[in-house]
Image (cartoon, rainbow, N blue to C red; front, side):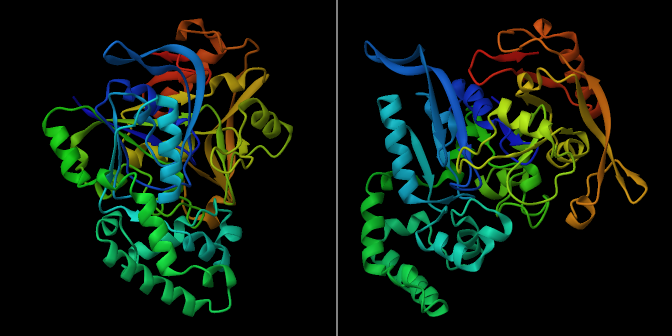
Length: 436
């Protein structure tokens, strides 16, 4: 079976968790390859695993919500193994909490494999982020993601494999803490962290997942050799990619298709289906240029109707109209084979709906997305205005049931991008997906 990648086509928060959950129902493996607890995937499902005789099956039940932060959304399914690959930075405290919560929801232990080469995010990383001021300057999630990736690049980071060698783990942790204690000798919160106590605490935590630390590169490539179905779950979105996004207002990992090669060890030619997930409008969290941001009552209305608040932090998201200039760019760098459009229902009630088809910059018209922030922040969107619709969409179960104006909206996006839209979402539940 083909490997499938699900990637954010905007600034994150596109609804990837829902798509991954749906596509992983028949998958053998679901893989996170980048990021850490700065990502949040919210899944609403009415199908839960239950024991029927000697087998466990998924049956319809009361809708339940689960918020994933480290574990791939596909791990909610009984047959699917969640893989935390080496491109991630893993907070062992958060991992244990999430494993326990998922176990309670499922009624059984989730199937999880953790890369031995994945780096750890430990309690000193968020402290360092606050001390350096990057959290306030870039408006990050304050989870310590940047400092953890910096330790990795500086080759002083701790990996999950270190937990298999307790004495060596203690020695490495001691050296790291000594380094940071010297840099900030007067900071009480950082100075209170002592290697012996922290090592003992983390090693104790790891007892619940240490036997799941494996060579995930071999695991995944063997699975593909055996024609297993593998879904790769991207965190954040393409415009937050460290190299290809709107630097410096980006994340610290690779959120595009290239992250699968570097973060999971799977060559790109093994992925035949590359799905870009985009909202029917655009949102962004934190600082940085946002050409189509609606800073009037329309932006507030989009936020309210779309319940646009972060899964991880609860922060209100900045909201605006769909940006086809940005989508053309993310389609190019990722090679999307199809697009899935979420939250079309949120646009109900607008008399007309603008879509940005180009930018105007110092008198010039731009069709290509500039990733240089100094240019992007001075770009003005050039809008095509499409007719809106008043009918609610949440009860539609087929694309043909949508109002004509809503169908036209979707087709205009397809025509502009030259990419088929294979699914349109009109609500959070499993049943509110219109496949085409």
